[in-house]
Image (cartoon, rainbow over all chains, first blue to last red; front, side, top):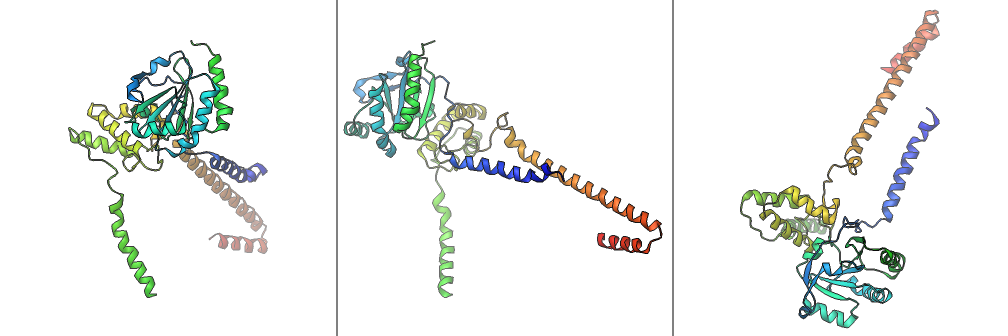
Length: 180
Length: 166
């Protein structure tokens, strides 16, 4: 038996151990979004409060914008909220809040209490827009470029570190890009 | 011991009631034809609930699963088939919605890997058996050659060898 053949089981074991070790560090609840680098779904919904009229996603054409999916029943959204307020102050881009499967009478007091970073608050009581965006865990944050293409998605509460390291640099890059 | 028996009996009794508590993830749904209903129930078992990833859409109580069940029902009523609904879900949630991944260049290793490993293993076993058999034939030939010299020692060794092999 050659040395290479003798070492083969050890090599196979190390490879398997390597894959398993990598698996331990991955978060299985974080799924890659098939929407990345695809055109964001177009939608028209009521704004909150309803007296503000309707929002058409085409209004955002030519703008870099953030779509944040949140709900008053969502615990992690409370934790994320200060980061969104900071984000809205950091860059001159609209942060749009999609109120997902929530009641307006719960959502509006929640915003009044914690502060409202959103340029628009949108009403998605049935979760239809959420479905089109492939939302499966609230909160989720999408970054959409001037051409209406989804460029980045964050699942779960946005924290200060990932905002500073990922979202803000990408926003700056997208703002520098011309619309095609 | 008596206490143990009682606790065993109690837990067995409790098990009788267990199945009752896991029903009714699905809302009552109606369809125009039995085929549509059958398609609906078959599809729900194929798709994963994204919220509670180890449950399919039929089992999950998550509100996302309820929304997806509603959407799938509406699409079936519109006359859409499995291919359309697969496409709808993959566009939003990716291949992960399938419990049984579709065969593609990305999933080929997943589908074929086990068979490749099995064939490799069988091949290795075959080669080992061949080598061992060839080695034995050589040994016996060598012993027979020395028997030809008329040496008693060699003849005894050969017999011992053959006995061991049997």
